[in-house]
Length: 143
Image (tube, one colour):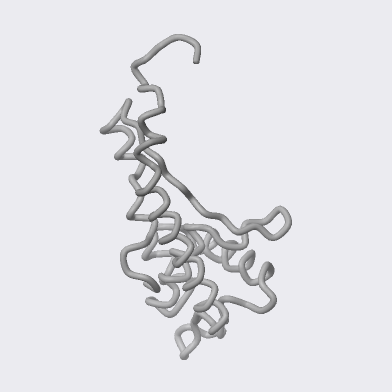
C-alpha cells in the first residue's frame, strides 16, 4: 500500500451501516474524473496497491475479491485517462509476465492517497458538526 493508514477499509462498510442503523456518519469519497470516466477513485487506488503487491492484474483482483474482467476494465480505464499508462502489462504470466504499476501510476497513487488524508482530516475537523445536523433514521415526517 502506498500510504499506510488510508484505504477503503478505513471507511465504515455496509456491514457497519447495518449494525449502526440510525447513526449519523460523514463519509467523503474522492473521485477524479476525466470527461465522463472516473480516472481515479478509492477502488482503483486499492487495485493499484494490490497489483503492486501481487505483480499481476489477476493477483490484484483476487486479493480484492473481484473478477479479473472487472479489474482489467478498471485498469483499461485508468490507462486511457492519464497521459501515459498507470499499469504496464507483460504477456505470459507463467513465463515471467504480469503487471506492474508504472512510475506515473505510483505518483498518481501517492498524490491520490495524500488527497484522501486531507479529506480525512477535514472530515475529522468539521464532520462532528455536520453529523449533529443529520436527522436520526428513527425520526419520521418531512424534513
